[in-house]
Image 1 (cartoon, helix red, strand yellow):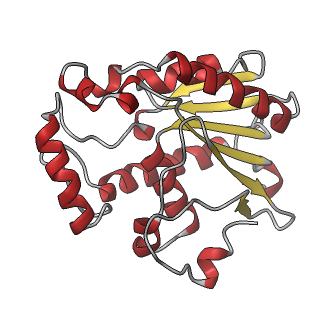
Image 2 (cartoon, rainbow, N blue to C red; image 1 turned 180 degrees about the horizontal axis):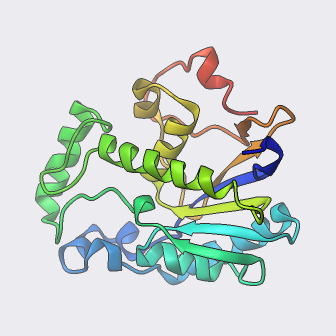
Length: 226
């Protein structure tokens, strides 16, 4: 792949506010993949869409989107249909699998166990560990890099996904340590992180993720952002 073919920017976007962000009991009766955005979530996405239009400079965008309803609705509400040449539904960018219909009390107990055990290695009883998500994100990166080889490779790439998936994408891309990943906080709903191509054709984040536990990033880890 010619380095000049690489996109100028790769935008990671978390879905807007969903009904489950307001009421965890929704997981008891609605499949995780079918939980919709709230009205506020649509508004958040529309606001972010205006910011992205400026960032993309009204140029074409290739999109990879989680098949979860809240991610698809976020993409629709961005208002960027005229820029999107290809929107590919990408199951490997889905949310971490926690369970099927969830028992709220049991999931809360497992959340506490996860905090003690570690978010990367803890596997939910009927779901995935962070390490499992890391592995599927790794295979997605192989696909995305092959797409960069195509003659019509775009200058802009947008991934509409989920908070944990975004953090693990960056952990894999920048080869961050598991300890650093464990300290990172999810971005807010409809919040972005942007990988910007540098003159040497490497990428840097426009800003770091916030941290929720103490950890001093190494010099190499800090070099991932501007």
